[in-house]
Image (cartoon, rainbow, N blue to C red; front, side, top):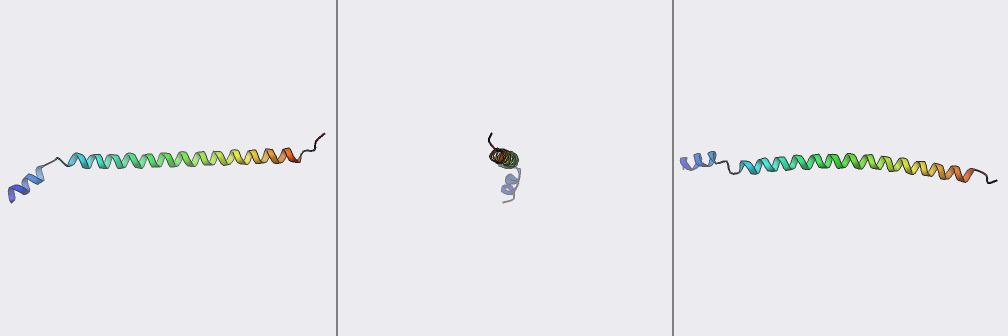
Length: 66
């Protein structure tokens, strides 16, 4: 039993799996953060364009025609 425990503690076969799981989780987290920031920036830009288009359209309607 003692030899089995020593063999189990010295075995490093699963260590690579743990490393890959941690690495994959880190890459996934960074991906979510990047996509979230791009989504927020593009939403802000789209809202700015929509506000500008609305203002230009409103100004065009208020100008009298010659």
